[in-house]
Length: 143
Image 1 (cartoon, helix red, strand yellow):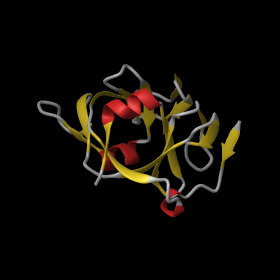
Image 2 (image 1 turned 90 degrees about the vertical axis):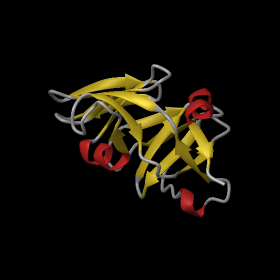
Image 3 (image 1 turned 45 degrees about the vertical axis):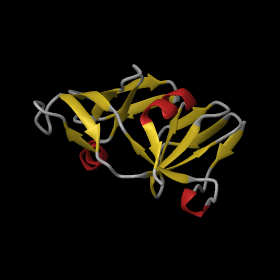
Image 4 (image 1 turned 135 degrees about the vertical axis):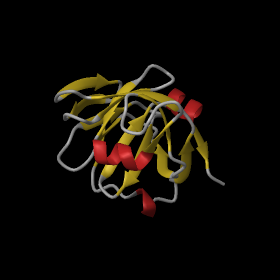
């Protein structure tokens, strides 16, 4: 299995920018916990967003990252449980053609991907993994 570390997709010619187009359901965690996503464990703290995507996948996002990346969909008010959509901010992504692991963010969970899944870079040291079928459904390449 390929273990990815010291990742910087800004330097990778095989990476490209994509926009997420999905409405998700969000519940803000009342206490710390952990959920198991398809890609591995997601630890969360009180106030972090627990997200359920249109494909039924679940994951968590730190509250400060969530506020920067998502916006409420009416009638949901920002900061309340309900429907949200990703802000139109492109993310770097690269399809990986063999099973792999990658740290979700510095000092956090290690995620795993299958051959054909996508490595996402949200910012320096901040990564995610997206399965290939979900990626095809909710991401569009920026031309």
